[in-house]
Image (tube, rainbow, N blue to C red; front, side):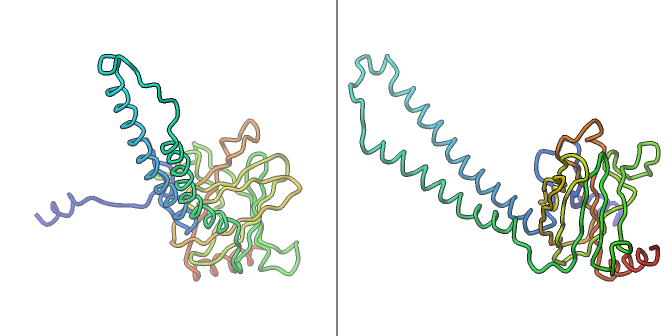
Length: 256
């Protein structure tokens, strides 16, 4: 009986990868993504109010100004009061939307004293990562390529077109800086759960801040058309505890 009771309880899990028939956002793992979702909900709230008001106005107009109810139409062509109202009210709504969006836009570019800097390089059609904070020279830096795992090599539970052979491992609850560039054509490094999307441009370095609030595995893909195999260069970020991250870095340094 006890087993049956617990079996019927719903099981909740965080969605850090796309799901079938998904319409909403993936679960946020960074303050930036949480801010994006909150701003979206705020804008939808105003949108619903506007839609309801406009539909009410249209319905009321069609009902009261029907030719059977008013065979002789009014000759009023201007209404100063209503014209002022429908000019000021949308402006106030735009201000209410703009104020939180400015704060969010500022946080997207603010890099807060990063403890770890990682360089992501886009290639046709894979990603490579460099951890240069732990080396004395370029020849000894931690660097590896990240290729998509083919369908024939997938293990049980792995996601098709999203799994890679080498994940980008980062510590959770730590300020990170990700430097993004490309070696050949335009790419875009994007992970929805992290609220991260940044173009990888050849000959140019772009940077984005990351602060992952929880441990987990987060999936993304290149979001810029980059050639025939554009759909086959996924991104996998694994956030681990600080102790596990230090152990992972130590093992990588031993391999050099």
